[in-house]
Amino acid sequence: MVRGENCGTAAAGFFAACAVLPYDKAALDEMALRTRNAYYRIVGQKGATFYGIASALVRVVRSILRDQNTVLTVGSQMPGLLGLGDVTMSFPTL
Image 1: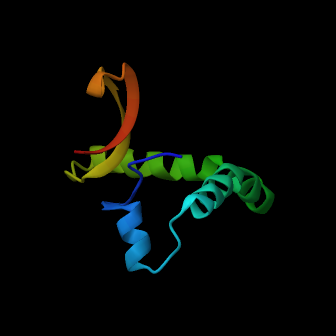
Image 2 (image 1 turned 60 degrees about the horizontal axis):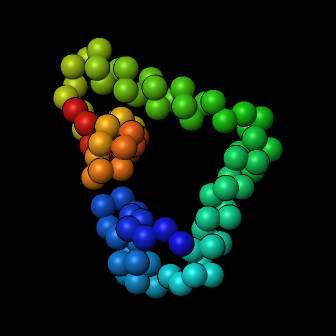
Image 3 (image 1 turned 90 degrees about the horizontal axis):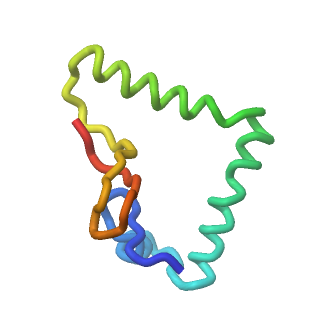
């Protein structure tokens, strides 16, 4: 089981308690299964998954070209972060 999971800026356990949702091993296993299988559901409904990637890329490029100084959460490679070696994580980025 993964520890330290977050939902936005709130810890997942806190979010689940506020939303009155189950937060135990069974609930986490169900979330993990649904996340792993989301690809198949999306492809079944839309026929592809690249639309979301293209949409996110357009948002990033538009922000850069228009000099919007927008805070976006993007994957950034963080060599040696927390002593974990080469890690790519999502961080708020200008």
